[in-house]
Length: 200
Image (tube, rainbow, N blue to C red; front, side, top):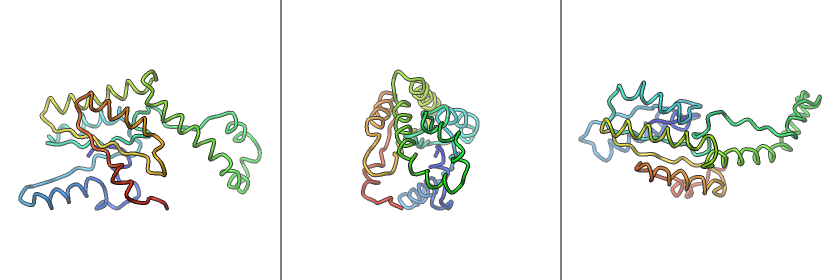
């Protein structure tokens, strides 16, 4: 199971990671077979990292099956999101931004600006005319080609942003369309997630 912090299991114990849960389900559904899953999740990885890691570390293990978990909000990005705007820059240069109590009190005032910038950033990642989208699709094609060459079954899972509403519906549709064009089978867990509440 290849992916970023979602696969790595940031914040959960090893038995609760996606790879451990997958292995448990496989054993339950086909108890006579021998199953072994590998957690190939690395925090902060993006699609370019997946290609390199897959070729260098996973292919030598001769897997039969690859589950590629695509975190929709950041896997296409080459550089991590850093919120930048004139409003935020002006605040960060001010004396008051250095005072812990004031900084804590003002954090909420800038949350809306950060959310707006983040939304624009994610939408930009899926812009067919943008810099990241063609590279992202190329990375997916490289993994697909390696799997086909070696007879490895490939399935992608499009992992959504878990919050109220479906903020990036169009971007998910573009991703799933690209996977279909590449001939990569994919699963969308959002309908199942929608049945549960993720409010902290």
